[in-house]
Length: 319
Image 1 (cartoon, one colour):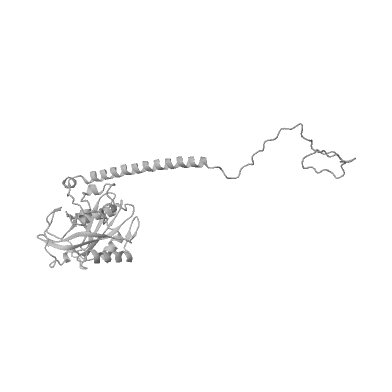
Image 2 (cartoon, rainbow, N blue to C red):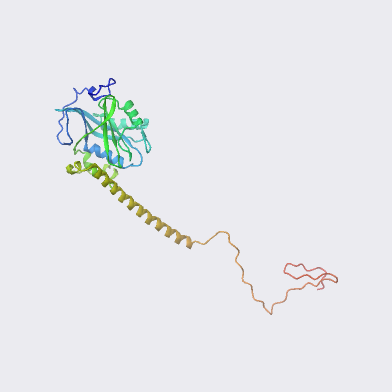
């Protein structure tokens, strides 16, 4: 039996007597007789879309929801998420800033006044699911209540994991997924994990715009995805992404070739204004009728010199 953490960072410290009763009806996963974390499908889709929009650097946000109880005990329901706008993001870590917290608090007060900040999420694009030292530091200092959690998502491999407090440390555990169709989530396609990893997934602007009308979404059958080999799913994801990259490279090559052709045509049509050797003037043919150049006659005793156009005629020449 694991040791009970004395700092309070353990799910065994959760006091859920005042948590409202709320039975789980439609969900994916196995409900056990202990504290578990449940993600609404709409919140999970928002995290997927956020991560896929920036799959070269880490992005982050906070998880919004409440604690509930059912016949099996307490559970945490992640109903919404708020993006960490203004956070300092790099390829290997992310940091919440004062501006980020101010933005999150404004969103909480305006859109989720009856909910709690129950955890945080961030992405690990291409390097797996775990909590780095900096991630644990964030958990210890900002999300250290026994029911607060940390969710990590890899937008390149499609893997994801949730961490809860067990024995004073964040430990990875599975989650349940509740299907929901609400006015907010109706704008977000309810997609399976495999479909969420498609490289041509919808951009957030295509369905989060206020001008986008709400529409009913039929929840797809995910039973086939649940029984697929994870390695096969990852292989399919990588193949799809490779095909997409090849298409992008081909399009870039065509664009570059077109640009080079246009540039070459334009360059050949423009006169060259740089320095060049002076053009040789054509030499006029000798005209027999033209008068002969004057010839200087040297004085007696002076040597003869070849006559040129620039030779000065002596002043003592007899005219």
